[in-house]
Length: 612
Image (cartoon, rainbow, N blue to C red; front, side, top):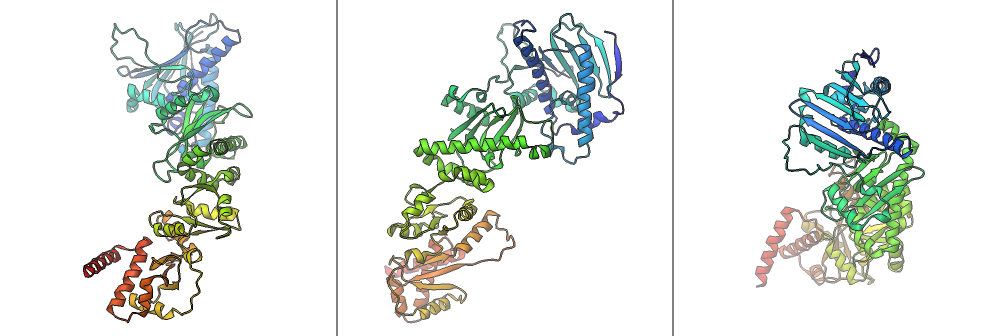
């Protein structure tokens, strides 16, 4: 063909600077885009071979990136379908550039493209100009007797198109890298980016250092940088446990074994494949610790895209490959796209199905996982009521007797002692005394120590309006008061205690408890406790709520020391006993501040000294 020069389009003098600034939030994505285009070209040729329209040359398909730091060039070489001169003019000068122009017109005024753009396959070729001052394409079509061509542009909307003596089928794209983008002439950097975005591409990818000295004695072939057949593309029946664990450790750098996993393998009504792992948590609540990688035809797009991955599932780790996603649109469109919402709902359904399957078929394993997965399940219920509807039958609770029960099982077992009331423990250490008292009287309580539980309890109460949750230290007298009637008024004792402690505002009650060994306990109302937990969850912020000190000192009239206290004459000794009883109760409840603790220790030492 005759040599040709021209303009890519009219009225686009400023488009390349805008493309360089706005097309992608991360410049390294140009590597993903050019490799994706190369893979598309190979796939087209592979399809023609499978249809019998082209005879295979038996040469393995591959993509080669060559980094030449001395010449300041980076090349992308593929043996795909290639292009004729007319196809170059059509696909490079017209279609791809028009797509880039439409993109710029839509997004050039956006303040934060990173939050709105998740990928623009099809515009990919022009991403090369984010790092290159000049780009060339040398290409030869698969068609017999086709003339190879050389296209060249310096990023100023002009181009030249000439015949070339390039002999191989396929394309070589050469980037003359700008001085300020020299990091992309670092072989290690290029390999890192290729592994990140193209680590699971279906065709072998090689990264070669043009300046590296070759050992003539070493005739071994270089290793491809990617894995062409990732585990998620296999049928679940073909995968072994060891393969799942190895894949998890290799890709998520976690040397703990995952608890279990969900293998997604869907072909209808949309194509979706992937593996979601339930990791073993290091802390009680790691809602931001997960990583779900989204792929598009084995090309990495981003992590934890909330339009596709339900927010509560981001606690998990895994991969999802969905070639049907409309990735050349903005996040705002994805959020409202019904098709995307169907994918999100289906992922949620598969996760809930897995939980139910485990509960029904492997109950003991499910119990062993619960301490790790319960924050995820509870958070999912709070964020998505449809998820709750799917898993409510398999939500379990651990009791103070180390047994696992459903809410229904707990209510049935405790119907005679406290009908429709659920006692729970939020802090095993601070509430240890109360737990012992419950056990002594054969009462049961659920252990709910996760920070999220205060919200979850309220949620469960809204779903079961007849059921009321109450902390074991909230209304202690209902559960542990003696049936003995109290004949004498204790108003005088209560006033003496307030006076001795110098705190007329202190709430004090005198009760006869079943356990005679305890002199006094601190009780906090359920309302006050929940407000306190909510305040802690939000970092101690006021949140516009009134401050509540809802503690009540319960004096146990069945305790021998308290009985003696009633008859003891007022004086220094009586004051000492009252302060000690009060601080002992606060110590047991974990409510003793540092100054009070010092006083308590000093007083205890003095008491010991007098007994010797």
